[in-house]
Length: 89
Image 1: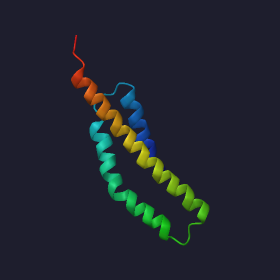
Image 2: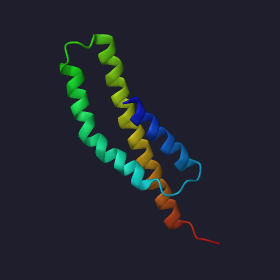
Image 3: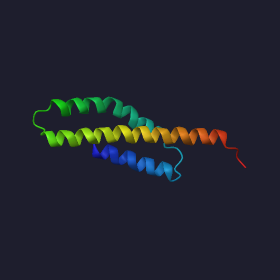
Image 4: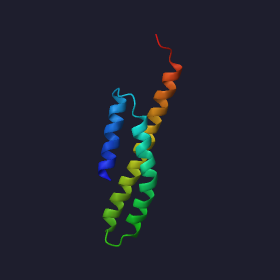
């Protein structure tokens, strides 16, 4: 989970730093997370071996992942819309 969040964070950082073609990466992570995320959240809720503090931490991490993906997609949309409306000198 932390590895996925780290990879997405690095990808977003590269995107904001000028790396142009991050769209496939972000949308690929999003597609994977749409499958894995709900399963992971159910697993955390149902696993009796995970204590409540760990469950809370894992749920917060999953929420952060949702937010990271949403923010990355917003950046892509913003960049795409500004690129189409800004005239090239």
